[in-house]
Length: 358
Image (tube, rainbow, N blue to C red):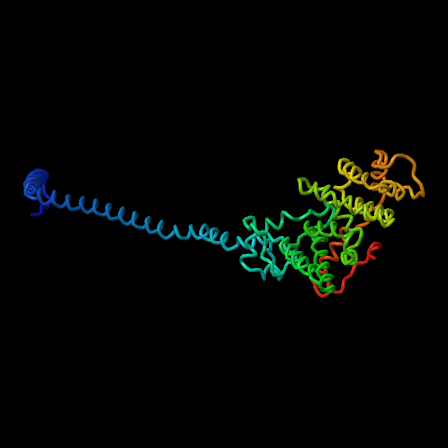
């Protein structure tokens, strides 16, 4: 029902406009419900479209989070696994592209700080929870502070085993076995195993085999160990110092003893402390002529006046040590012992002669 305006006179035009408006209003009353229903559909469509768009956006954001989370977590997971995998390597302190002995170690060896040297083949690495290692380590005499680390790092359990084999062999009735056992004991003593050092200091005066295997300077050095450690057992072992000096006195060889003693004192800074020198001379006062021999070795004179083992002698010894280069006997003894420990066949042929060996 269209309404078309025709070009006509103005009165007729006004009449036609009036009729068209009335017709449209009448027709609007008939189409109003249809218009309202259509508007509702449009509005519902708009709302539904907005809802669908929001759902799509939320779904996409969730997918982004779900896919991004594993990517972000990969570095963290890799770091955790890297720590687990690299822990043995870090404990072995070997991060190098070049081949190294650490690469051949077992997982057990790389689980603890590596204190071994190549002389400890066949011995598992020490651990803070290894009671056997700790028990053996308690019987070690620490090396002088100036000794290089490469001469100190032998597993004490190997030295203990060396000493036990040597001690058993020394109880044999066969002289060759006794001699071979004395060499094994000497190697353990040179590298700091206290029971071996005590045995040598104790038996040096009475055993010709030990005297043929161990130098007199080494025996003197071992007899001074009780000055470095404390305890009732150490105090008891001080008697061996007096007995050893008495042995040289009985053989009219106190000059040799004094020479060895000064060399040993100059080789170990710990023995140069005032209280240790005082204790040493108090013990040597029990051996007639010992302090006089020391004074004569210092001043290079045939006779020395003044009381024996006087405080002035202690000062003379201190000055002599500080002005005389260290002979390096300890370091050389350890080097030789390490060679013998690494090559047992060489130990079988090694014999150390000393002036008092016969």
